[in-house]
Length: 589
Image 1 (cartoon, one colour):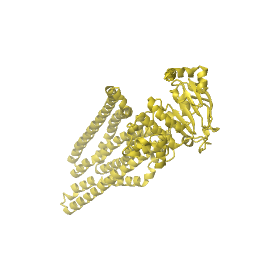
Image 2 (cartoon, helix red, strand yellow):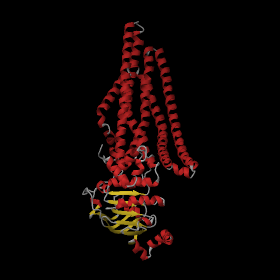
Image 3 (tube, one colour):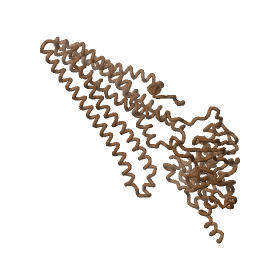
């Protein structure tokens, strides 16, 4: 399903049913198999009654054998139907689950940055796996359970009435008791299972966070602390799951006891009916066999309500994400091919969902091909300012222009295709060097990949490895040093070849020697591109065409390195704090 469906709570059922459409033939055959399976289940008590009342007393051996062979044939048919229901029905459910998971993954790709600011990865993974599994189980078992059980209840009750309607009413009288017992137990179960699902999401979130940071944990020797955090969530899961199973135990025991009492009452009443000539022994035997045909589907329907609750809850959690507003281009948005790279901020203000403004009335024009640097204390708004250019967040006020065109009139995809970002925290995908570099242009040739690696000064290192560009880098590039990661991300941007470049603290986490190596790659990368540099290390921005000091979301100062030093303001204080002593020592050598 390529397009996002429009949904509301009122059409939740229709949305769920829409996933059956590609599997209409399988679904119809599944229901047909369920019908045959249900109808054939009534034959055994019917044949039993006939044998006990007629064939056996009259010594009709031929009929007994024929009916026995016929019964075996019915069992073969039931086995075939059961096979189709269990195999093809499950496959249908799995395919529906896969379709929902694909839709969810596609939707997650289109959600804005702000969504991921407020949702944990582990919780999202739980919705994509555990929740969708319960939905697929409902998709498969729900219709057939409902169909088979409903048919068996009606069919078996009608058959019981044909044997003895008074005994049938006695059995039917137990139905309200069974329902009341079930509803009470299932309310407790549902509440506990809902809570256990939440705890499962918390476990996933904690596990994902702890495993991602396992090296930090080892570095600080905090394994005991992490274990305690995990055990807290794990204990919560055990507690709520135990409550659910306690309620399930009460349900199972109550249902079993009620059914057994029903059997006892029917046995006593039937025995009395036989004594007083109101019922034959064969009819009583057939009736006793048929009680389970009535009670079992009732129990299945009641158990189905639990599956229904699980599936509906899972599907609602699925639709909660699917209903989250995606990033959308404005109606008049157009694609751009390759802009010159002129960037202009006009009266730009911005605030996140909570809290005050992060940027206040920013006015900057960055000519194409120029290098502008942004400095200032952490939290001043420098990174936020850069994130507004590729429309990671929506502007509160004002507008940003690319070559004179408002970014609101440029499609998100084409805009981001022309912007390259190198960040301090480099994210590398599990895979090879080739795959990670080619992420900058997924259709790139091997020659393009190698050329990008050369320009990023990492080709010699890669080619010296036993498997070269096919070497696995480990999860998130764990096998690489900080400098190697940065140069790999730079190679990725070289391959992308954007018109606008954003360097967000690209070297702040590197040691001085590594920084020098990476800087060479960055200088090469900046050539011919409009470049915005966010930096704490002022050594990286001395040669910038203009340096802008951002404090508390406002432009405090702007000018070249020399001009800002001459002004003696905030920039000079930053510079003196970092480099004055170093420069004086260098001059004496």
